[in-house]
Image 1 (cartoon, rainbow, N blue to C red):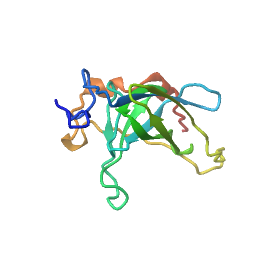
Image 2: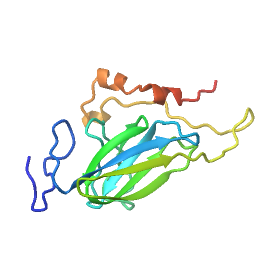
Image 3: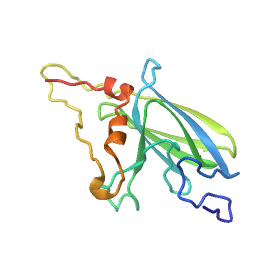
Length: 175
């Protein structure tokens, strides 16, 4: 572990015991539905340095199906049960939140102060797609990957632990 001239971490970031330098701040994120209830969501956090950030206890995923003409790196994200705290470099930070394809993709830009905590609540807004017995709308993804061709070091126990009640309660299953 080390730091560059700006005091930023150079040890690769998060994880238990990760270094926090005097140029870092935090985002206290809450994701809620229209009624103000906490809901599970997928979150992308990108600081001005172009790097992705996640809570120290989160499993960060990478979308390896990206278009290099849109961005130089794959999008990195983590799943939240509705409340997360993320340590990031102070400055401008973009927070993107999605909750399925039946809701709007929410993008927020926040200013994080050195050694401060920026409160951010993102309200999920439905697309108002007509869903009834005659519609063709289906939103779902029922597959999981254990190790993405060996890139990740997941275990069956960790994969099973990801079944958070808020996530499972949010599933709508039609037969």
